[in-house]
Length: 86
Image (cartoon, rainbow, N blue to C red; front, side):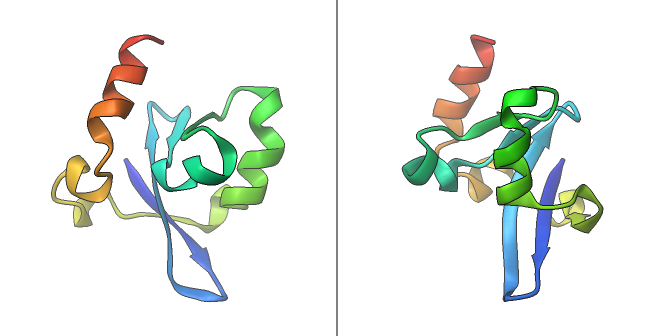
């Protein structure tokens, strides 16, 4: 599923994917955090998830508006390889 965080200061919002209701996939944050995947069930990720994505109640599901995963995330091949190793 794909989501957008509704940001008051940013009309465009912040796009990211959530896999299996557990993993947030966001390749656009890699340069700042040296990772692109966050685990919603990992206590160590709670603070960064809250900082980057805010309250889950403010997320909007945009799955039906996305044509193809690779179009939204150009680094999809790298991410898919990462998930194969989980």
